[in-house]
Image 1 (tube, rainbow, N blue to C red):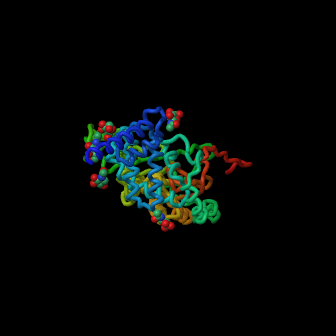
Image 2 (cartoon, rainbow, N blue to C red):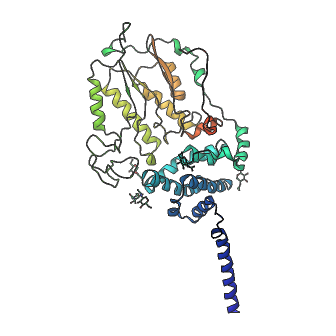
Length: 407
Ligand SMILES: *[C@@H]1O[C@H](CO)[C@@H](O)[C@H](O)[C@H]1NC(C)=O
Ligand SMILES: *[C@@H]1O[C@H](CO)[C@@H](O)[C@H](O)[C@H]1NC(C)=O
Ligand SMILES: *[C@@H]1O[C@H](CO)[C@@H](O)[C@H](O)[C@H]1NC(C)=O
Ligand SMILES: *[C@@H]1O[C@H](CO)[C@@H](O)[C@H](O)[C@H]1NC(C)=O
Ligand SMILES: *[C@@H]1O[C@H](CO)[C@@H](O)[C@H](O)[C@H]1NC(C)=O
């Protein structure tokens, strides 16, 4: 009996070897996407690095779809996506994914899955949005999951609560200039015809209050120069290319602005306040960065009128925004509070800022500023896809046509 069983086992293993050989020795190519899925299922992350990132992404999507069909939670999906993040970070930038991926996935995956669950996004399209694949696979094949989800999507019909044209219909275009102290040291912006207007733009300050002189400036992370990061350095007093702005540098810049002659008539300040440690962000951190920077600018440049706009880094997580969710409504309400420290704004402007972080006001009698919220429609704002399938996926160019020139 014993030798019989051995023989049987031998036959079975020979047969198994034959099947493997039929797949691999016969010259019939094994579908590489299936190989990727097998590696993902086995948890073999090292070997994944040998495959094209688009293929790995599409393989991950196949597995994620199975999880979604089983109503898996975000926490269950994170380990499925993590290998892709690790390979991506290492392959494309030499970054340490082990350090960065857990935080990034924890921040972004709930949003991506929310938009997928709303039926507005095929998971496969995510590989295209994050630039891992050259084309949207949705355009080539119709996914059963998407058609399933699209049914619920049509039922829900997402509608924004506010729209820019409606909000601009009020009195705001006729209001008196809020600016009484613009121009040179408290005077009205009094320009004679032909006088140039001098203005200054501040943007992407990305102040890092945790920047540390002497810390590693080469650290295999998206942002270096912090004491607890490992690597080589040392970071200089005024910063480093791999790091965000130290306060010391901001001080020098703001002092130089205060001493400009002639002084700018006004300042345009187009946002992005917080540092780039996208793997370790929180709403509290974002608000703290904005509050600090605005108080700083208001204190150091008290005579200047600073017209702000929302940056994509003012939200948590960075670049994601939608006016219909309460966390973003809180953001825009806070912005109305913060921004009025920088320039006197009429109530009509404060109302639209609180509503959606946009406004218009007069800089002087014949000069108007329109500040719009460019987080809407930003490529990596996944919420954008809730607004229907857009030209991005069909790879269409959009040509905006009209008759008369505006303004
Ligand atoms: C997933 O959830 C939906 C809706 O709550 C339910 O209809 C479906 O049966 C669930 N599927 C599984 C596999 O649990
Ligand atoms: C990138 O991957 C290689 C090979 O697995 C590894 O030796 C290296 O340490 C990784 N680099 C980082 C920054 O994680
Ligand atoms: C990457 O980060 C992890 C977690 O902090 C750390 O243990 C590891 O040494 C780092 N690897 C490299 C290559 O820097
Ligand atoms: C995507 O396009 C780039 C540049 O044209 C090319 O090098 C790469 O092989 C393409 N990737 C895939 C998966 O087709
Ligand atoms: C995240 O930031 C806090 C301080 O804000 C710090 O203590 C912690 O070590 C950071 N974590 C990582 C992974 O950088």
